[in-house]
Length: 53
Image (cartoon, rainbow, N blue to C red; front, side, top):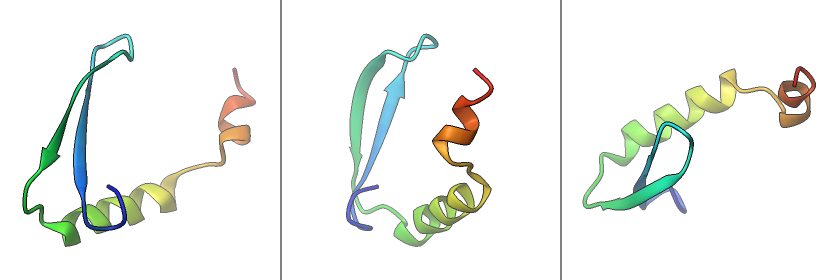
C-alpha cells in the first residue's frame, strides 16, 4: 500500500524472487488499512527478528 490509497500486490516465487506486480483498481482501502494495522501491531523490530539468525 502506498500513501494509504494505492494498493499493489507483489507476486513472489517460493525463493523470494519478485515475479510481477499488480496495481489493484478501486481497492477496499479500509480493509488494507486494517491489515496494515494488524501487521504493525504484531510485528517485531528487524533487529530483534534478525538476532535469531
